[in-house]
Each structure stands twice: as C-alpha cells, then as structure tokens.
Image (cartoon, rainbow, N blue to C red; front, side):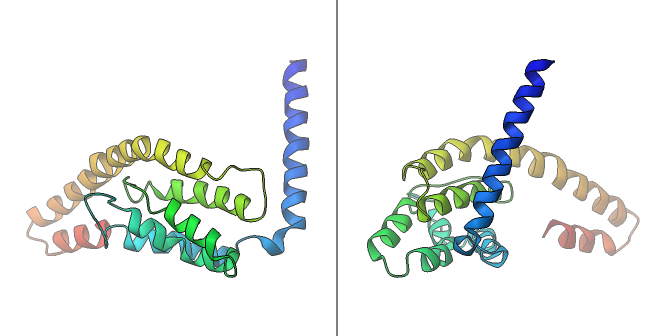
Length: 173
C-alpha cells in the first residue's frame, strides 16, 4: 500500500510539472481549431486519394499541411521532412484511426517545439498502431454498429415504413 502511495505521488508531481510546462509554452502549441482542422482533413479525405502503394498516406500528409504552415512556414527543409515522413504507406480503419492522428500530432508538436522526441518516433508509432487499430475499428464498426443499425432499419422497412432505408442512410453516414 505504501508503494502505491509513493507511485501515485510521483505520477501526480510529474503530470503537474508537465501541465505547468505546457501552460508556459501554450503560445507555441496548436489551438483547438488547428487540431480540429487536422482531424477533419484526415476524417473527410482519407479515401479521396488512394494508391496501391501508399493507400491513405496522401490524405495523412494533406492533413498535416496546417501543422507545417504553423511550425515550419520559414523552414522548407523541415516542412519537406514532415510531409515526406507522413507520405509513407498508411492504412487503418478511418474512424478508429483518428486516435492515431491525435497521438502522432502530439509527437510532431513536441518535435516542432524542440522536445526530446526523435524524428523517427512518429513514423514508428504510426506503423505500429495502424494494424491493431484497424482490427479493433473494423470489429466494432463493421461487426457491431453497422449490423445493429441495419437490423433496426430492416425492422422498420419490413412493416412497410419508408423510414427504414432513410434511418440506415442517415445513421450510417
């Protein structure tokens, strides 16, 4: 029990120091609007530009253009390195894959503000997470949510109700 209290105290001190550090440097951090913009760009364009070689990588790199504009507007070499880093093969389940977007954005932000994150770390984590997140996302979305919505819609349509197909179209999108 004593060990748990010590660990809890150390964690609390660490996170308080981390929060204070982030608050001091908040002018250099992404705003909520910029974070939503990165999220929306990948969320709405992940299937708009596909290739057999890179799959969703084009949309991933496109989503980081606002990030590159903010942090690397006067450093073309670093901007190019960021976009090349995120133009590598990427494929995951799009809705659950947004979790990866958040993780990688925070790592890239640490790199941009001079944190101690190595430049290969975002790529390694992105590559490591895309398979497991795709498996979880496909299982939940295509294995649970869509069949439930389809069952409700078919139940409505079986009685001759025109809301059945409309319900499925509206709730699935």
